[in-house]
Image (cartoon, rainbow, N blue to C red; front, side, top):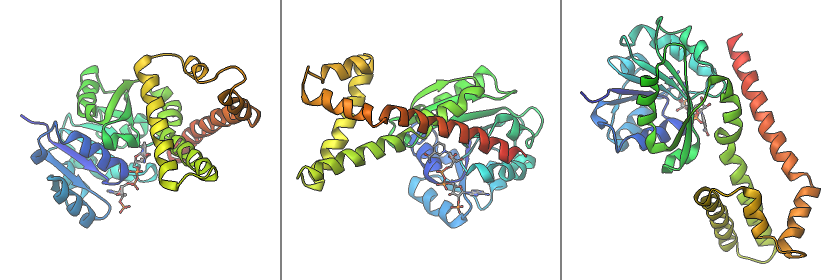
Length: 270
Ligand SMILES: NC(=O)c1ccc[n+]([C@@H]2O[C@H](COP(=O)([O-])OP(=O)(O)OC[C@H]3O[C@@H](n4cnc5c(N)ncnc54)[C@H](OP(=O)(O)O)[C@@H]3O)[C@@H](O)[C@H]2O)c1
């Protein structure tokens, strides 16, 4: 029988995951709920899935329940849905900083919980999702969730203790790259290019460089050196980036995210 899937929270990430799953799941078996029921109904109608008027209605009879609400809301949602969960249902959380233990303590004993850190390029199937098993989640549960998320892009697995570091790189990472694209485009405008051309050049350069790093598998330093002729223009730019501490700033920014993710988990657990 086809899997019955429930999604709680039809926001940015919930909808990205839902859209990516739809080509491979039975849309008739998918039910969604949201903080605003009318929003759930509108999005469900647009995507060809069912809408529920409450979280408990959405999870009743579901094999897999995906929680895509904000970290501050997820504890309350877990407590709310616990009595309605079918025995053996897998609960998947995409909330940053929230441990499987935090959720398991609010769910029926023995509930398999899988923690996932996705990212927004999942919307176009070019994301990366990183899975960790909670205490009662087996390899089969992880396989089941990995196959559901295959449409979001690449899927990796890590021990849960690494999820804060994952959040800092791939979870928040698209924002750093969009920031770089914007800065690069601004430089193009400063150099006299139209905004449209500057944006296209910046976007295509980031997309092409990313694809090249992925397809060649070469170390980024090797790829960078190939663009940098001796005494040339690019090497002068790299020296400027180094002098302004851009590499250190990127590392510090990611480390701040990792620490904030740990802190958020602790704040909510208190
Ligand atoms: N966005 C990202 O890049 C990203 C990346 C990785 C992980 N995540 C994780 O994904 C989760 C969702 O983030 P998001 O960016 O998608 O946030 P979002 O756009 O605000 O979506 C959250 C959704 O949950 C709904 N909601 C709130 N309380 C609810 C409740 N009690 N019951 C049912 N639905 C409820 C909200 O409805 P209302 O609008 O009515 O409140 C909203 O539609 C977060 O835990 C975040 O850590 C996000």
